[in-house]
Length: 126
Image 1 (spheres, rainbow, N blue to C red):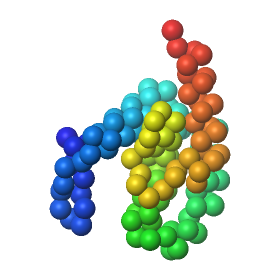
Image 2: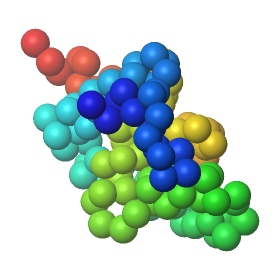
Image 3: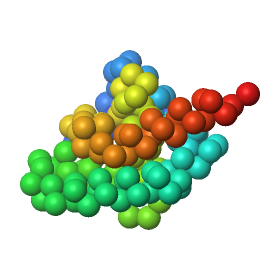
Image 4: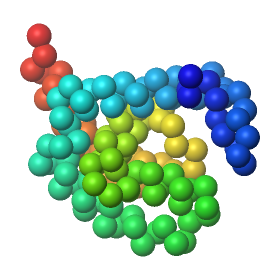
């Protein structure tokens, strides 16, 4: 049900139809990640690590809403990688869930790795 509601200033509000589609694409990215272990692949881990190193200094320079989105995508451990892969997958397939960030533009190495992972999966599946 989270795709139908959006919290703004601590209050839930109805989400737009566009948000529903964006969340669906993002969650589909999570499903593919779980299926093939995309965000755990050495290529994605290396790309993500390099992108995060470039992005973390921006956390203190961004407006609060954008910083919150960036913190979510750069959280420690595997969670940040999972979220970044899912969001990049969503952006590649029509739009992601971030409002203030262009994840594809901010994580170019991760985007390249995501594209390669998706292409390889498409070639290998029955």
